[in-house]
Amino acid sequence: MEGKKVPTDRFKLSKYKLDALLDITLSINANLPTEDLLHKYENVLRKNLGIGKILIFKRSDTWECLLNGGFPKKMETIDIESRLLKITEIIFDTPDLGFEGVDMIVPVFNNNVHLAFVFIGDIEEEGEGMSPIIKHLNFIQTISSIIIVAIENIRLFKESLRQEALKKELELAARMQNLLIPDNSQMPKNPKFIVNGFYYPHYEVGGDYYDCIKLSETKTGLCIADVSGKGISAAILMSNFQASLRALLTNDIDLELLITKLNSIVVSNVGGEKFITFFVARYDHNSGVLEYINAAHNPPVLYNTVTGEILHLHACCVGLGMLDEIPSLVKSELTITDYTKIVCYTDGLSELKGDDGRDIGTGVIIKNISNTKPVEDNIQVMIKELGLPHNNPSTFDDVSIIVADIIR
Image (cartoon, rainbow, N blue to C red; front, side):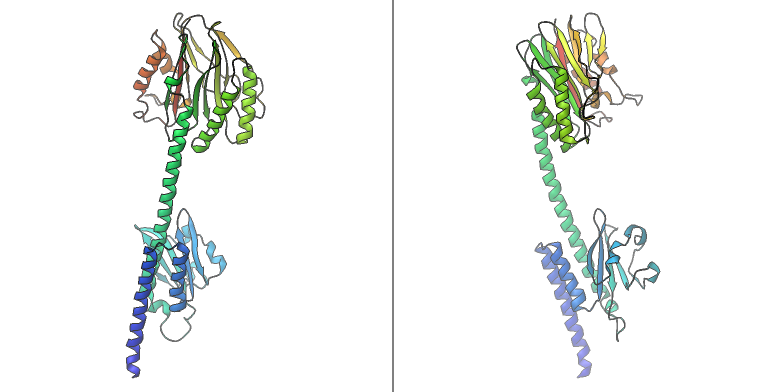
């Protein structure tokens, strides 16, 4: 009777292994969480097969210890990148690697890339008979691969859900940001001050903003701004900035005071982590006086169609949020006497590359507006010439432009 005992035990063991694989597979199909899958895996190997110690390192963004069953805590700090990536097959007897109590390391691959390493230690190796590691080698390798690939798929699925949620958030943020950028049909209508804007976002959301605001029957405000950095944080900051600007900019507020108040708001909102370059102008249709402040923004270009004179409205102070208090804040004024064009833009335009590999600067603006045609037509020609928004390989940022024909 004794001779029949071995095959019976083998049959029971084989049946147990098949049942364990089936249970793991059904658990995976049932979308059990990672913690439950690891618990089942550890029970199968340690409690039912007599494997003493199990340690799993898995790659995600970095290498992390996924499971430690029985190994010293210090084993969880192994530098996988430098010590294990050379391992391409199962290895036994690891004293040369300096791992205490490790009898076998099983590498797990996904698309020919290391996905995980399973460390096995066998507390029964001193006993009689075949070691559980050798006895169950193929099963250990199979169930380890199934579990780890399943856990990776769970991670990838969660990541895809996260990315989809982020995509929807970006789409919503983009729609909200587009509401900040006024459509040309919404610009104030005045036969002496004709304003048009052009906005070409490079990403879903960004930090550009321009606006034109009717301040009174005789005064109109014009501005353009650019937040340092990109993404949702820049868009949120610009949204807050737009609300503040529209609340503060009036027909009679001193522009120096406006800049001071806006700077305090930006400083309190970002704590020095970001800043805003900003140009604001206020035009009096009766007197022809254009008063402005440029806070570290790209200098707008003015072209007098009668005299041919070109002016750059250079910065007079630092950007908003760069310093708690802005020093040497002085407003500039000029009187418009002839039909004049003004072009305000962000660095997404001026830092486009020309054929020589250098930034195009304002040369392309000057070339296109140096005539008596409406500036809106000039910019449409320029945009086509530059291949905006999709046919210019040097585009790396939002391109925002606001222009005005000042008729005298």
